[in-house]
Length: 259
Image (cartoon, rainbow, N blue to C red; front, top):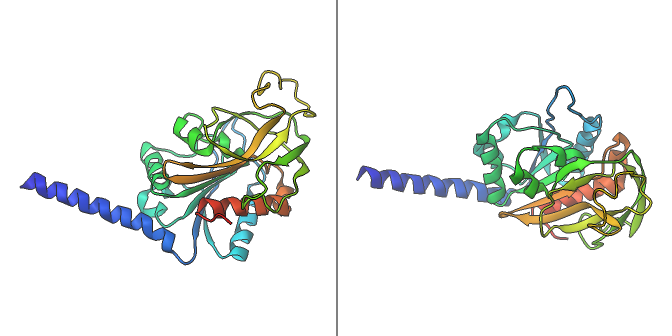
């Protein structure tokens, strides 16, 4: 009888948790968590663009009817705190930014319950020891050549995060290479490799992706939705509507919009 009662209680609690996760989709004002944490220490690079990117995200929220919370506290990664959000944004995060297996498990449950995820620029350099995260975000940061201009080509002109962009445009940034790329990614933007100044280009990516390398993509993953862009190293990028509207579309796609 005691075992049966415990089993019934566990099932009841599971139903309550599932209900709590699902009710976030019905919130009249979508809630987004903007997570800015970086691992700090010798050899750990922290971008100086985070204040600018955070301000841009705040402006997007104000102008587009959603709310954001901003945090650098990994303690936010609990079921009780994450269930209020539709989307988690890793905003130029880098290196190890979660502290415990419990926090990682809460993040996984958020995604698996239908939560959305957005990664901006250096987010692919986060959690470099965690293969599950590489699969979620779409790949693991490998390196970038020197800052330089290059051509970006739109690969899906009908996507909510790219339809405002011209078919191709010039952009000056760190051209990010990632490896351990997930299968089945829907590529949104790709950078032209042919004129890129990179002495190591033949080593990777070589000819793996032809004359282009993916720079933004999205996919559905373990019940959730993940969107990533490699653009956005420079502070001034976050006052450029090409990037801010790109990110806005990514957030909207991650919480379930298609148009």
